[in-house]
Every structure is written in structure tokens, then in C-alpha cells.
Image (cartoon, rainbow, N blue to C red; front, side, top):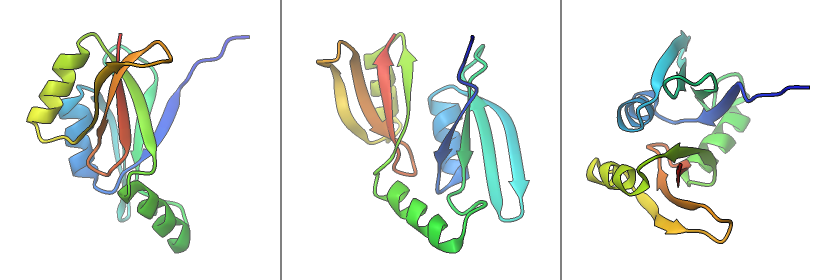
Length: 132
């Protein structure tokens, strides 16, 4: 049996700000930009990789109450979006900081034998960056 990650979903409050973060700052490629009524879904991936990240609106396809509950969790930073690997952890965190991204945790060696740090995307999601 073979299994691979195909797609992961991250709720975002502002698609344009999120696109600027994930595409322009992290370097992901935009694969799809889908508008359906008032909602917009963005699919991105790291160059040369198949696994995709879908940025989706909390209210898309949900009841008003569920959309509001999810949006509230996103806004207060209660969700972790993803963990990305980089070959230059310190440089990546410094570049994000210079662009105004909130750095939650400076790069450090963790007890689970990973060197990583954490930032917040424009919606409030926690994004971890690990040394490759």
C-alpha cells in the first residue's frame, strides 16, 4: 500500500492578504483561484511538489453559525496551519519579520529534535518553519 498527502486545508479571513503571505513571502505557487459567489478558494503548492494547500473561507459551505465559530477560532490564532521546511530557517524568519509578519517563536532547537520557529499568517493561523 502507498499513501501520500494530496491536499491540506487552511481557513483564511482575507484571501488577498493570505495569497501575498503564502505566495509572495513563502514562495508557494498559485495553482488555482476559484471564486464561487462571495467565497474564494486558493490552491497553492511548493514548486516541484504535488501536495497542495487550499486556503478557504470559513463561511464557504457552512452554516452561518459554523462559519462564525470557525472564523472566531482563526482570528484568535487558535489553529495551526502547516509546517514548512526551509534550508535557511534563520534567513526565512528574518525575511518574514522584515515584511511585517508576526514572529511567535524564534528559531530554536526543540526537544523533539527539530530546529524550528513559528509565525502567524495574516488570518492568525500559526505557521511553523522547520530547518530542512
